[in-house]
Length: 217
Image 1 (cartoon, rainbow, N blue to C red):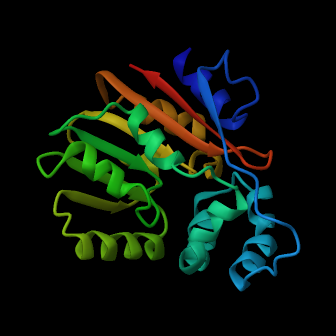
Image 2: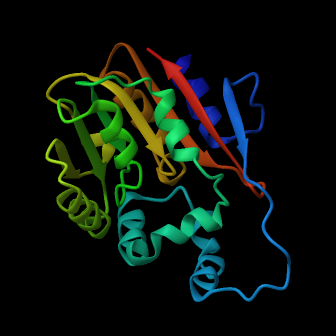
């Protein structure tokens, strides 16, 4: 029941936030109209088609995100993510120093500074992603930041098995891309410690809105 509820919550992010245990977070409206769009905004607008094509087979997702890796930050513009939404999603995990957390679809590591602050150097971060280009950027970020407690793996999340259970799992703007997402959700749920928390952060289809769903094992 929990797996089904979480899958529905992520697929319909924000459609019924109270009944699904989701808190909607809205971004302030943009500035005055008439401001000239930057080149990155144009890239973001032209690539909205990718979002409409998801979920998709793993190889399609891998190739697509390899191409988008240099421009990934514009996705926060595409989805109009509220400021601070990543940090708030990580807080929902209720991580403590020494914990181990898995991020499924970690991408370029946009959430890692919040995860690092929560688990501290005695904890561990596991990052799984299909895209070698995204993982390359994530690895460079970890090296630059001096994070030595991170393990990055390029693999389909459905095939990834951890050597031991983890304290928390995070999907951040990745769940909607996964073709077999309900199976993946059940797979990672089975690898959570009792009492562990799973959070799914997804952008809403409506402007300036997103949702973070949370379940506890």
